[in-house]
Length: 348
Ligand SMILES: NC(=O)c1ccc[n+]([C@@H]2O[C@H](COP(=O)([O-])OP(=O)(O)OC[C@H]3O[C@@H](n4cnc5c(N)ncnc54)[C@H](O)[C@@H]3O)[C@@H](O)[C@H]2O)c1
Ligand SMILES: [Zn+2]
Image 1 (cartoon, rainbow, N blue to C red):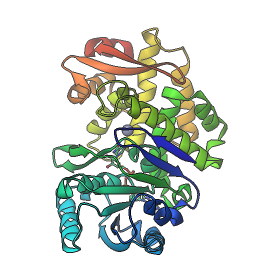
Image 2: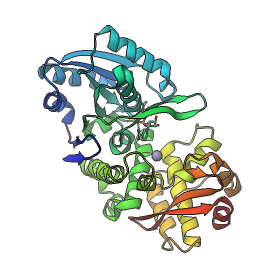
Image 3: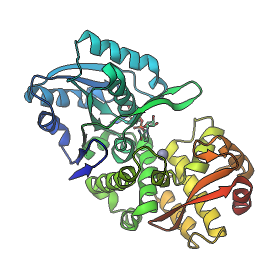
């Protein structure tokens, strides 16, 4: 399946079992053979898929080099990016050459950031290998790294020239990270696609991973296209994230994963929405049922007061008013400005 993303610089997302072997073929349609290609990957993914991707690029006539960094969010920092710049410079990369990122969201965000900034921007292609990266991070053009003060505090918008997703690669992804991605896929169903949601309820979505990833990509694409720089409609993608981010913060970004936190956040948003008369009664329970089915948590030991208090530093908040994302029913979302006190009352 090929999904067109029509941002300022349009590109295609290919979602196909076995697509990893076609990277060279896809790249050569966009770049000349003989172009240099730097494969950026990390220590878990490179040994699994690196050779296949390099072979595909070489067969298509690219001159390849590679840069491998230690896997893990703790390495999503400027020091690692500096290593990428050095490798690119040493290998004589120029503005017309190519970066190819192979890995999860950490690799895509950081390799994309190197591409956005090296020589003021060179082309990059993404090969996402985790569910988070395939279903969410590889669409939208957000790249970046963390600071000790918080996640993704440095970054740039930089669209890839192509994304090649191979759902077969998910077979080696540890369960925990798979579930993390499922949280966002369920979110995409909640905000825009009742059929995807029902597929997940019936357990059918996991039997057709290609279809699930493709649907998820198309949903994110629709929001991103409408609002590439994230100032309006794209905010809907933050469903479950107001309370979700607060929970991650309360847990010190350890223990509870992002996807798990978003799941709990969606249930909380529905509880508030139902109380406010916006959300169809029973929706929160329905989402909780789906999360449980996939082994994701639906509630947390922190109190509602603590959670609402912790939303104070939310990027999407403006003073005392939060732009909470609610759904009317599965597949129908709205932006709902609400005071923190009002939210607390609705959740109590
Ligand atoms: N740019 C965006 O819009 C966006 C959106 C969501 C998340 N993100 C970012 O993505 C990151 C989280 O993504 P993630 O969960 O993919 O993190 P990750 O890249 O750390 O991958 C998770 C783990 O899975 C391993 N892995 C990845 N693919 C594998 C495979 N096919 N087989 C075996 N192991 C594999 C990795 O080595 C790592 O240990 C965060 O840094 C987050 O900020 C960005
Ligand atoms: Zn998220």
